Image 1 (cartoon, rainbow, N blue to C red):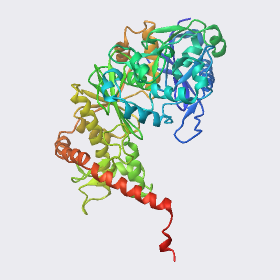
Image 2 (cartoon, one colour):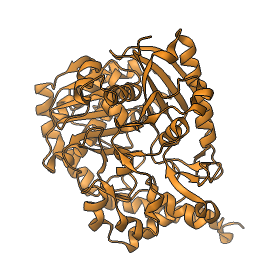
Image 3 (spheres, rainbow, N blue to C red):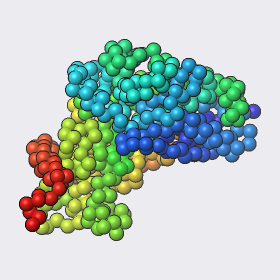
Image 4 (cartoon, helix red, strand yellow):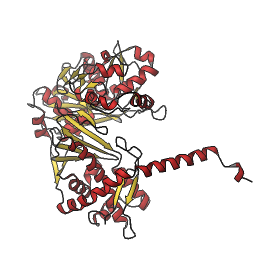
Length: 515
């Protein structure tokens, strides 16, 4: 029987997904199995590696059952998975902890703060390639070593979720270079584990798995995994990749000059570069190809529109009506500028930043406010892109995904502020498509990843910058930048006032006033 199918597996935070795709990228079968996210304390977030494997086996069997003789037709398997989750594996190949910290687990915040106060972390940027973060393996392992010493002492190997699934499928271990690059244990200049960074964190680099390329064939399906999953023994499994770079690959963002805008609740901006962008507010992940993706996360996007809908209309207006109101107002919203930092900034220069309208008059209505909100998110995103461009990187095109990509007005606003076209893609599961591209490239089905992207990635639309809007935004841009740069003193005063008010509330009523 012809081996004409590719199996993609995605170990996400909410579920494990599997899909069978053709060589042309068409999805023939898809299945998902949800798993629990455990929150034992505020700021903690855990999952069980055993649940990932149970889910993976279930969805693999389900997609194989959807097509007659599918197991014999699978040519190769590629997996991706949520980044940063830290799986401790003992000498018997079993998890040393039943539940492991995920990417959004922040229990190590105190350790991180101490590190940033005591270590010259900005001087470490040329080695680590990233500013310190609670997400990185290095700081999660620090916490586990200090607070789970028995489990850490039994640890023989550290794996990511995707690598744990690969280990269960094949018995072989490796980590992809993109995942390794976001651990704070990786030397971005040499592409290897950094003994120096491990030493600064008090960790043993011998626990870290071998680093390989995502499209390398790791091994074949083991006899035990074949019996559990229904796959054929010996079917090749590639090393795979983290879910974020997989989605970039599946969207076609693989060459310098291409960028990605994923706007959901927040806005994730990525620019493909030839080298890491070393800046305190920029993070970097190695790509599926040996290039880099510089990225920032703006904690504003759909959440800003959601706030405006609630604040102005008590959620009674549908989003289509809100967008229609904004579209009825000229670019620039009547010289009304909005700083969109409703929740501060995660990776920004000013963590205590706040939202504000600048230029509000009695002549402004709801449409002006809604348009200003949409433009404010785009101004903030463009500001982050300029930081990446200032490092010598070019921006040719942006590929949009997420809920924000379904709003043409917002795309035209962004294209006019970014100064380049914005493309939308056909793929609903770009990470799954990226996995299939890696699997096919690994076995020679595609000559290389650019050829795979050219064949499989399909674009559904292109939004060009509006020249007249660009002129308007060029005039308002300095207003946004000046307000952002010079408002910190007001934000600091507001913080102090709130702290004083909270202290008074905690102290209780003044006894002298109660008589």
